[in-house]
Length: 90
Image (cartoon, rainbow, N blue to C red):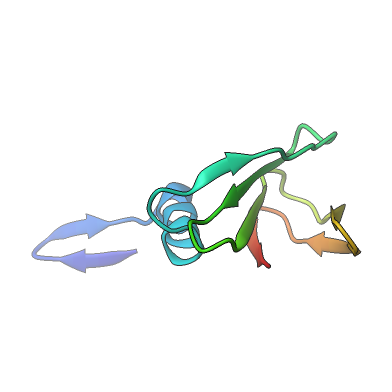
């Protein structure tokens, strides 16, 4: 939290999520298919106009979560701490 002119400024989770999207997802990007079987993991895959792909994954639980990422020949597992976000870009 920051204090500005006697006003307390608190950064909520949405602030950080927006930061991830704005850094890795371009204007006019399209949502593409993203399958997720864990209700505590939220994901969005997007196709940027330049052909790159961004996958943004959010762990809404308070505990470490493992998930798998697969895109064409790319396949790996990732461990995401609780209440955190990660972005993959191809």
